[in-house]
Amino acid sequence: MIGGLFMYNHKGEVLISRVYRDDVGRNAVDAFRVNVIHARQQVRSPVTNIARTSFFHVKRGNIWIAVVTKQNVNAAMVFELLTKTVEILQSYFGKLNEENVKNNFVLVYEILDEILDFGYPQNLDTGILKSYITQQGIKSGTKEEQAQITSQVTGQIGWRREGIKYRRNELFLDVLEYVNLLMSAQGQVLSAHVAGKVVMKSYLSGMPECKFGINDKIVMDSKNKPGTEELNKNRSAIAIDDCQFHQCVKLSKFETEHAISFIPPDGEFELMRYRTTKDISLPFRVIPLVREVGRTKMEVKVVIKSNFKPQLLAQKIEVYFCHSAVLKAFV
Image (tube, rainbow, N blue to C red; front, side):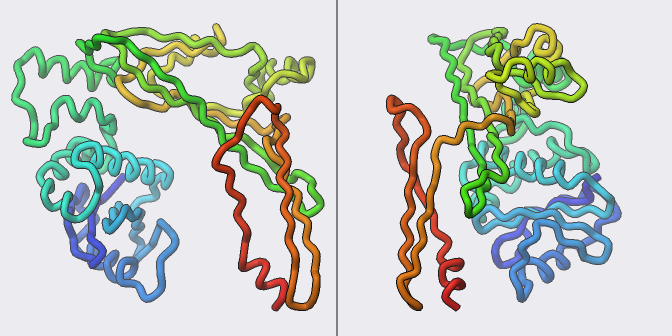
């Protein structure tokens, strides 16, 4: 899958170089430096093809991370790998910059060897990696600890280790929703959808099994499922187009019992994501009023009207103006 992974500083100097396949040579390192980092024009695309070689790259601060491959790979999976790699490195030594990478280069190589095997992603869970990779290297534990690590990596509950204890059991749940709206100049809604996610912080002892019930108004909208008929009969229902769950969720119980049953990982994690496109109640309505006073003067009045109940309160509202569009109107 992946031929190699390289890390550069802002000057193009190689900080980390790990080659997983023989089809990627040393010239790939120089090709990325010349065509991307030192390019005359800024490279905006995160994917660059050079001599039948694909470079998937991201930049975090002053660090470039590039994945090299000569095969036709899944681009979304590669960028998910890059994002998870950055999160894992930051969980070990904080901010990802040149100084931290140089000071912890041995640890970085250990992490890369664990998360990738012959170019294939293996283990991207921070909790599992920290159970046997420390700042000093691999932990020299007893046979029982090694057996526990093996069962955690290959067992059914690989996202949570056994023996976790807290003096006080706590569980926090946050629901975050983002409303995306496209409206015409006449005030007509062209497209609108809500993207939401459920984030949890779990501080529970042992191996607890949590179960959340879902409101009866929520219906999974699908052409091949009876949820669509139920939605047509009951217009007050909320149709969810698609949802994604964390690997700890038991999908079989969700389909049969309409409930989310899971053994949560320790700490903060994202339980689920969902998206809906039907019957969206917009929280605000923006009404722009434009009046041309003269050839060089224009008055713009923006009215924001809230559509939610008076008991609710909105904070930190920002409205952005496109200055370039206003200037082009007078050119």
